[in-house]
Image 1 (tube, helix red, strand yellow):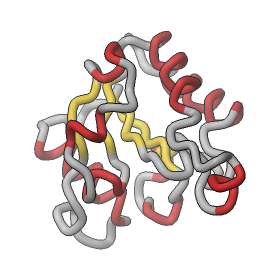
Image 2: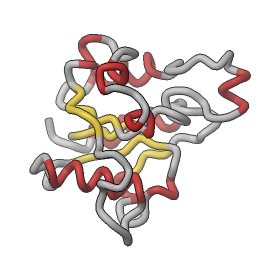
Image 3: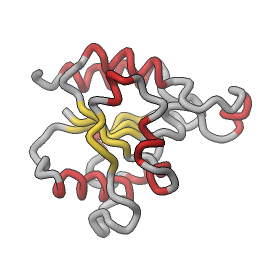
Length: 150
């Protein structure tokens, strides 16, 4: 199982709620990492737009070392995904799967940008942009992980 992971609106709230949160980035990362530790078969690919502005090694810094070791990489930059009719994020994920000969691997995207998915919405676990990785998203992600044989 591959988890395609967004940051904004997932690992911390987006917009004004992020400011109300003290502007703390990655405040929900401990919750996600705790869940991931229960499912050691899950690998991670960063699909956040942060990958377009930061070095890959910088993207890895917030993660605990045991989880960092399970990160396979990041999706291709904008413009390198599959063309329409696929949504932008969806196309980047599908391109990553093709490039890495993983099209038959089960995958899920943890994201707040539902509009970035047109044909693969069934692979999406939605986070509310202003609440991030909350109990509801955690329960749905757990169910997806449990549904895949180890």
